[in-house]
Image (cartoon, rainbow, N blue to C red):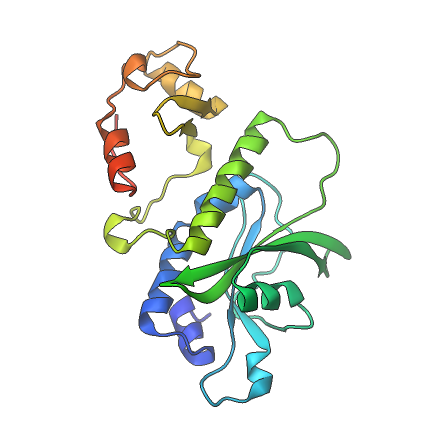
Length: 243
């Protein structure tokens, strides 16, 4: 199967820098799929300059990832599949307006409508693709604190994708082994205090001998170094350090 770069070169008019931006997104979006409890699809417009109007109304899936925190909606991989604007009108609207569009799309396997959040991917102010979060309708018990916290973080990343702040530049990005939600999540507020710690994060702290109630505390008060956090806040880039 062709990779993202090959598909983009063969089917789109994206330039090298734009394709590299999409590649960085796909290399780091496993975390986003886990945070959103949903499948993520990356669409780009099909067509080259002078290719004709009909090509401009089609979209190709350049990337597809499933969450490890929830069940996938698709057994088959959608990479390389093309759709029309009639099949995915929300994608067309999001790409055309450069705005986040929320709605529903049909799912052939489930034979029902599923939720679709379309997030325009921008590079230097230009919308070059659309990331779509597709999730089944909410059924059963209401989401708990963990689910609400994770989805809120996903929406923060979504806003960064629209503004062009995410994915991070190569020189400041994650390594080839990006963090996963299952490792544990600790959210810090702008003051550097713990806003939320997931159960796995609390277990990790316990293994370090930290048993205090983390909420509202600084990492230094928990016995952890804050230099990494200060650097991340100051430079607005990922900073990786093992403790």
